[in-house]
Image (cartoon, rainbow, N blue to C red; front, side, top):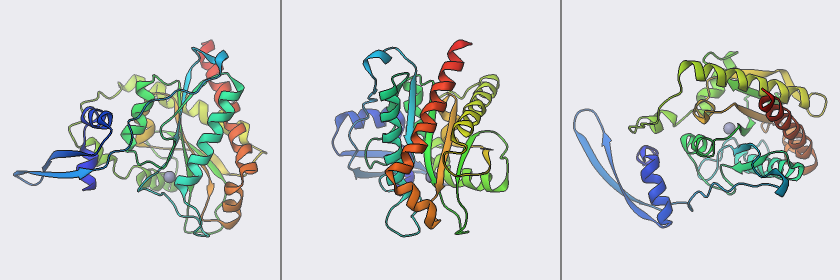
Length: 283
Ligand SMILES: [Zn+2]
């Protein structure tokens, strides 16, 4: 069922979502050899509105898309206390970052989700493409078998991972993306040159985030890392994946659940985003 849902094309998905009601979905699943047809009834989420949040003085300013990782039937990592999950904390931080950016008035903001909704990675990246976003920031919370692992990490897109852990994280965050792409996706990929530019701009943004975050909340050693994240690649804009800390660590969980502590993170990210947008528009 997952595979069928994920194979749903974006055009069909948009049309069905626009209907706003449950719909009968037909899909051709190409198995080994003969194609088989299947159908199922799904309750579709409300249509994506691509709502843009903006202060009056920010009219016409660049758009930043904030992506709260996971959601709906995908909770992401579970916290060590068992009381919260990644999808709830990413949404809280996304809303706080949106509010900070709107209040400061230098950019406009869109969210990939503003509720407990499941979205594929391609649907998230498609928001950035539709809105011609200047930046894409995907928010996540880390988890590791080592209960002592702590601190935030900022990942930018690269073909080659900076370390084995970054490669494992990307593989885990990319789960399901192969199924998305396997459904006859006809969207063109960026040229190699455009992709190189996207990677280099993404690395600049990540470095600015490290700079603004240092000393204000806990970062891991070598906090700027690289890996091949599907959602970043498809955003077609400078894009980073921010891991706010380890909810598998008791101390980090307490911090990440505290609105006061999250406010420090949101402010640092907001300042880095504004600096980045300003530097880019000067070129
Ligand atoms: Zn995640």
